Amino acid sequence: MASAAQILANQANSQKSTGPRTPQGQATAATNSLRHGLTAASTTLFNTKPEEREQYFQLQATLREECLPSGTTEELLFEQYTYASFQSLRAQAFECEAQDRWLDNPDSQQLFLQMERIIKLGASFERRAAKAFKQLQQLQLHRLAGVEVHAELADAKVFAPVSAAIPFADIRKTQLAKEEPLILGLAIATGLDPEFNRADQVRQNATNEANPLPPGQSLS
Image 1: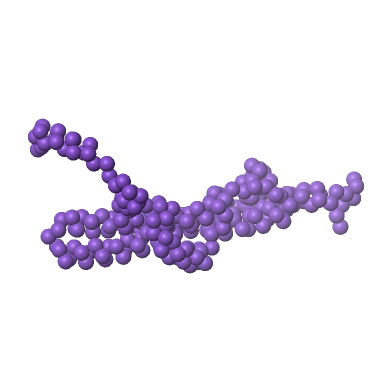
Image 2: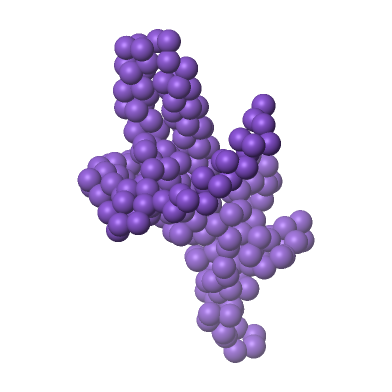
């Protein structure tokens, strides 16, 4: 344990340390915490390492062709998935470098801890990428499952907003086995009771509103 005299001496010395004074020195000090950039935000990382910005955009373009995100919500999840995947790939490269340094000097506790930290960061990004991809996958599954419901609403000339957060894939497993897509869509969009309203009645009402006839006449 440090003595009282040592503590006072350390405090006095710390007052003399003002850090780097030149612009170049301050810029270097600002990036000391980045090192590998695995804990940096995307804007900070790419501003500091512009050569990696192009690599990120290439990965983003490739994944976009495969994932085909649609809408703001899917785009946000897609960005999370892309950045986590990018950092996971970078972590793998840094892990190999850290392992080589440690193998050259296996008695170095510092090199071992650095390698261990990079391994943990890489595993964390792998989990983030997997979570974002699963969420994106579920959201797209629900969107595709709701196509029939949206089509029935449009066919009935019912233009009501339907939230993208509705789990249509889960609903199809239960409600669509009992109700037609139009009734289900109306229940979601307008709050109608699916047990009371039938699809043919709704279609007839929509047709009558679109083509009003004089009293006593009917559609042939």
